[in-house]
Image 1 (cartoon, rainbow, N blue to C red):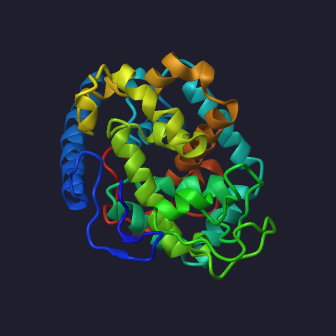
Image 2 (spheres, rainbow, N blue to C red; image 1 turned 60 degrees about the vertical axis):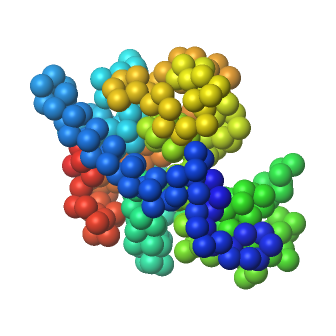
Length: 312
């Protein structure tokens, strides 16, 4: 992806291009068209199969959040629901979820994040990735790595931040938790845009389908996931130039679970936990009162659609 905005040389770019040569507008239009068609088809599958009969309210939300992130409810492996429940109990046992969500609302982050992800055609529930990364702390600084310090709410390392239009500041090599006014990674508006842009890039290249794989890639690095996808998808070398090549229409054939079956033994435990933390937070966020929190869905007031197809 060649991001819109200002590149590392400081020159403006007037047009954005996605892998395969499609303009951003065309890519988003195609994404939305496929999303709507898939949602309609998928709702029919779920209704006909009676998938939710006999499930608790909590379990229904777990399944629906899987669908929000474009995972197949029909292929969720044994133990997934119970594992999500286990992570929900973690959020219930601490003040972290409530404190972070209230911080985002108080500081005006929530409407910006929701609008930004919706503008890029992505589920606004990626909001909870920001919770897991930093608890919505604009001044967050990660540990020292060979790639430099990850900074800001969305924890961009310097190189990835610059790739998505975020200029680093004079404190780029400072590991203290201090906001650098010259570093765009600490600017919640710019950083939210860069994060959505980055996730869109991953989401598109991850067969335009798997939200959970996009989360895993954000944590583990797209270089550890994307090169393995052609084999998983059965795509030829020639087809790899087309970002839509080999994308199965049936959501059961393009899930996070398939990737785990093939490569799960190589995925770090930290990354698997990372995905569960985000998914379980998104489940709670659908109806916080069901889980003992004294507030409603924090995203709903700012969503362009009152609910994502298949959501609550």
